Length: 209
Length: 172
Image (cartoon, rainbow over all chains, first blue to last red; front, side):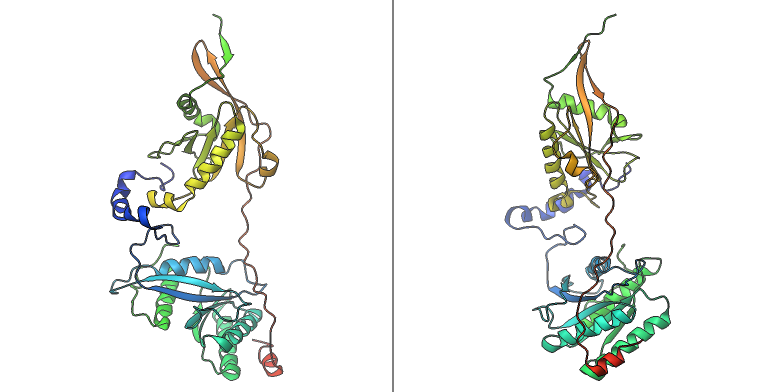
């Protein structure tokens, strides 16, 4: 059969039997990939702020793709974690200066150009007034490493000088390609570390995106 | 030998399903076949073919094009629901809906070019007591939905820079 999505129902009888109680009393817990994720433990909400400049390259990583891919990656069960929990990414609207979830670490995804840096700084400045002062900035869309370095340094020095904030530099994530899965796994591990969770990712275990 | 041909006005749903499945090749192209291990859907069936990227939902009614369309739309909703994802591993929703009815269903002007919905005229005949189905050739194929370009919306925020900040962020 051409479409592998449709497989014999017998393959799914086990998983279905294990979750049948959810059909009766509660709405099943469905992940972003549409699959049941088991009984939830702790829910980790990661606020994400998008600083997408008008010139965000089409070949760069797109915000919606990042959100989905990182959510999947963060929700891969860690091999050594006792209780993994469920990760959710919550987009912060630029016009809202604070949210309940934005009290901890905030991930800022920015276009790697001057407009992206200015946007990222503006958003960090706005958010830092009333909510979190812990930010990690991830860039995408740079032509080379030098551009990434200049963007990071300009933003970090400005935030340190004018806001007194130390920015966690999360580097650059390119569009999906040969190295994307490994880079995404590293990013997820770093995000979990910055969020203060104890779960440790197996670097070799990456989401298929 | 004289052929006794007349239009069939009363056909059982299961017979019409059998006719549609027999004609999948004519409707969807080479290699078309019904998706296996699917629960029975009244008035619909799901099929794949080499000409389509994903499964195509066929909705058929020998009399009422409106019912064929609405049944197909309702089935599309069900196949796109969260519950469907529980039953089907690596779930992929239908790539399109093909309505089979003796007349055009309502909404073709609206759907044409904006939704992956198309329609083919069918007529069920009895030939010497044997049921058959005539499928009209495609006259004006409705355009398939063009993929929506995934262009991100830029973040719109007015910069609130002091002169010092403006100077600092004037260049990389």
